Image (tube, rainbow over all chains, first blue to last red; front, side):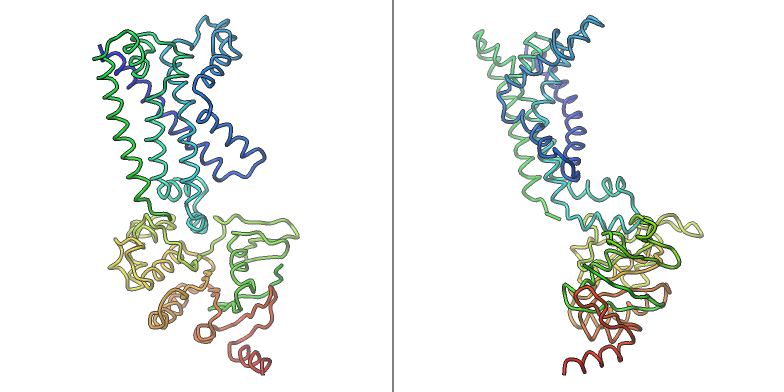
Length: 220
Length: 217
């Protein structure tokens, strides 16, 4: 059946996109507006999963969160539970691997807003937070939306790190990209074809949306 | 480096000088956008900045209406939303913030643009909206940074009258930055001439410009 991986991918991607949008916006804002030591180091850290092989990111996630991991170990010893090989692990892998796209887009979008508008808002008595929500965010919305769409697509296609941390358990951690891999090696051509077409369709729509969002963008 | 001392009386004070003379820097210091190294800024008996006792009021707490050189109208808001943005609460008789914004726009005779975005307004309409927005938050002082540099000569003449009328309506000091002699003479009850960050001369326009003229010849 193709429904199991479809349902699982939908769950994993929905949860990860929500986390990525919130976290990526916060980090992007920090990097765009903050002036602190190690700022570019932090930026590099958040960009790293974009250039590392996904299996390397997955390896670090196991080192951190696996049953014997730096964080996962103590948790397992205390509770007998480990995040590894659960659907939540697939979410973690998707978030880590797709977050860079959101951070980069959000930072660029926020930096492209002319600070004059923010200063105007301050002179009108508005706080930093109110200015962010009523001025900066609406003016940066296209770039931010594009970042959400891009990272959604990246999360949907996540394979390597998911395989490493969550495994390939049908009905539990087998998302669509993993199901395609399994269908191919077990000779289920039809199943691979249908899943591949669905992923291609979603990605084409996403890329189209992204280019529409960024192309027509007015730079304020 | 900037060393500027002057008193803005009731009415319109002109900060006059070439570019680089420190006019805009002075306005930005009054508004709290930048922090001076030393000195004292007070408006209507309220101290905004005093380096002797490290007083430094935040931008938000300074009751300043600022008209920026390029207006800085929020491009994602209509004229009335722009004006309503800085209005703190609903006014008397239950008038909503938007209703008050409309009254402000009507006072500048541009209530017909209230649903328009800045990019669909003429230079003069944008300028009036910016002025209405600056006045809507009940400022104790209004700062105008070369507000007429982007409009044509005909509109400029009209707007000069409206700036005077606006000042007479709200009765708070206006500080108006310009390097245009005609604007200075037309508007100014007091002219402060800045040169390389220092006050070179201050007084009524006739005195100031006459003496500048004598100096040049």
